[in-house]
Amino acid sequence: QVQLAESGGGLVQAGGALRLSCPASGTIYSNDIMGWFRQGPGKEREFVAAIMWRLGKTFYTDSVKGRFRVSRDNAENAVYLQMHHLDLADTAVYYCALSTSDYLDYLPAAFAYWGQGTQVTVSS
Image (cartoon, rainbow, N blue to C red; front, side, top):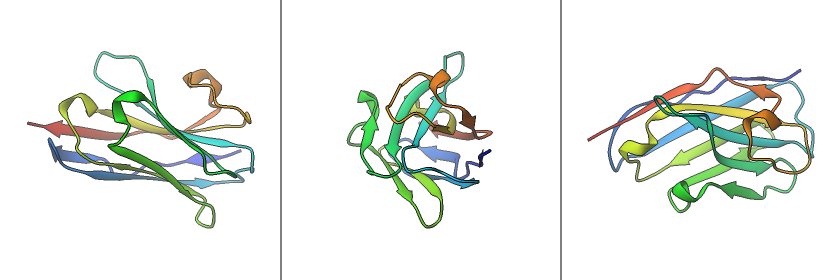
């Protein structure tokens, strides 16, 4: 059993930056994948970024490439999402999630464990 708890959300002006953190309690195995998703108002939950726990290989949705960076700290058992150049379209509740599969499926259903979410609001 793994528990995830996101933090770091908040209100930021367009063009600003935020860093989300997600420490995990429980064991993250080497083949697990940690992901970040978001759900904007009236929208479905969508994939943002992911990182393979052992290899550190990263994946991003096109809209955040070059602006967001996902990283992990194996010793701290945590995953992070550094977000730069935020715009209004990034406003959403951001969730971290864990997949126990050893290959990346971008769908939320592929991730078994979820945090409670943290709100990111970008203002003009």
